[in-house]
Image (cartoon, rainbow over all chains, first blue to last red; front, side, top):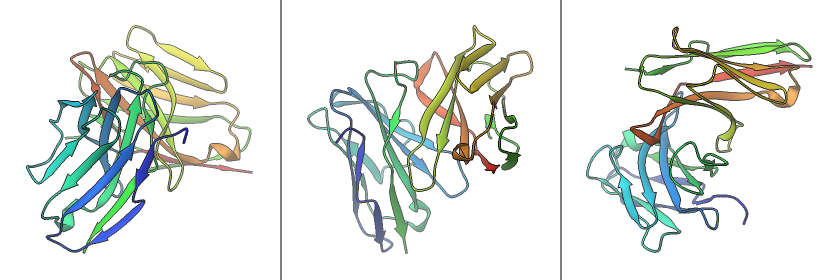
Length: 117
Length: 113
């Protein structure tokens, strides 16, 4: 597709379970970002990939959160031992190159809504 | 501590009139500012940006004004259209880490026909 694709669009899980969220960026975009948006809040930065490597993971809240991008395209955000506070919309974005100043800025997917019961 | 503040959670405007959305920031290191628009169940879409070396940037019906001394920026939409009804987010970044956007809480704009 032409845009950033995220799956699943909705995920309901139980406290303590493991969850994977997938992001398929726009073809040719080297930079990929994960953000998290809780109810009533603005998006919060989690991690940024340039190619295959995590260039900045300073936004990951704790070691239960991990993300990979093994071939420099699709990325997976992994959350272990989920907690109710992890409930949020997880947004993925991509851009041609890194940074907010590049042409076209960040293109966001529709998000994956995670609900932890 | 909210570094980017949008103090108006909502705004209602009549179609054809001007919409003014405001944003304040506290971190003087921010040097690039962006506005994103978000419809329900969709991801944010980029609207317009401004560098700190400018005080105004215009794109069609959308104009962003930056007042660095006041650490304040505003988005003007003229004329407002019903399709502009959405949540508008202000975001900022700084040269030291321009990959990480810091976002406000958003302002929900309703343009009434």
